[in-house]
Each structure stands twice: as C-alpha cells, then as structure tokens.
Image (cartoon, rainbow, N blue to C red; front, side):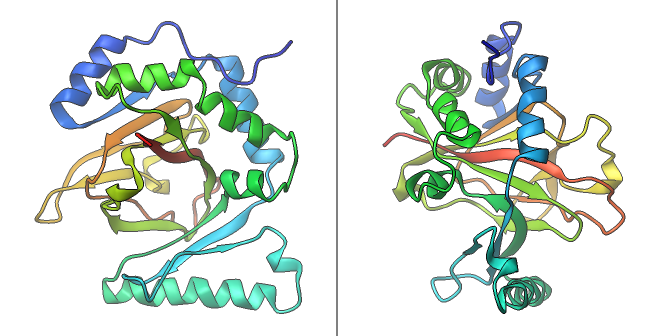
Length: 246
C-alpha cells in the first residue's frame, strides 16, 4: 500500500534539537521521504478546494474570517471575499495586523464532513500519530505535546500574513509548525518567507519555503509571512498549525 506520510529516517534529530534549544526555532529539511512529500504536494495542488482566510485589524472587533471554498460561486460571494481582502489591505496600510491567503481548514472540514475519509483527514491523523509527535517532542524538548491541529495554506500573489506573535497561549499552543510543499525552485524574489523579528522590527532570521522542509518555533514569538508579489508564478503550499499540550 502506498504511504502518504513517512518521516525521513536520516534526520539528524540531535542537531535539530540543539538548534531549537539555542534559538527556539528550527527548519528541518527533507523531513519526509521524497515519495510521500511529492504525494502530499499533489494533494495540495490538485485535490484541494481552497477557501480564503482574511483578517483586517487587531482585537476582538476584527476577528479572522474564513470563507468556504464554495463562497465565490454563491450570489454575492465573490464581492464579499473581495471586500474582506480590500479591508485587509487597508488595515495593513494603517499598520494594523492583517492577513489574506487561501486555506483549507482541515479541522472544520473534518467536523463538518466536507470530504469524509478524504486525504486531508488522513493527513491530520498522521500529524497526530506517534511518528510525527515524537519527532516534535524530541526536537523541541517538550515532552508534553499531545496533539496537532492543521490547515492547508496557499499563498498566491498578493497574499501575506502580517506581523504577530501567536500570543494566545491559553489555547494550549506551545509550538507553531509549517510543513512546506512549495516548488523546489521557489525564488527569493517570490516572497512567502517566514520571517522572525526582534523588538525593533529588524529581521533576525528567515526561512525560505523549501519543498519538504518543516519549520518549528516556540510561541509566542514575533513573526510574519512576507508578501507574495504579483509576478510570483506559483503558490506557496504548506500545512500549518500548532502543537498543543492540551
């Protein structure tokens, strides 16, 4: 039977753990076997019905919005999505927290039975299986990580994730993760970088969205995903979420 998700046995876990201990973040390259990473990329690029995630400002008055994949086909739906995207643009121009990117919320899809027994549900099972959780525990040194949530994300031209810190640790978030499936030849000029900032707003480290690379970083920690410009020819595909202690 063809596997969908298999951790690369050649990962130098001790080296990754040392780097995480030093910087509270690490990028693990070639995290999956090549065959399974290619399979996941195919699911994301060809078998995912993308909706939109948008936020246009800070605080409870501006909650994140998630638009169902079919929203654009409904009467007035496209206008609502475009209006939300423009509101995010205006919020960012003011310096407020905002984002817009395509996503497939796997937890919502599971709970609402969008695609019963589909590949995204299977991916969530793998992310909560011992192989992946044990890797995360070993690298982060956090033995109390018990589960992962997940969404599939696509950063196409004009998409970005504004500066924030994932400070809502009351939800049990301990570690954020980004498992990248962007094209191998992803160019630095195409944006989509995961950038970490210091208190002065200077970039202290950045990770290119390498194919088959897993980013792990402790939260809260100030970061952003840089703007993908209009000339970027491809999408930055990933599975993202948080590893939790409850």
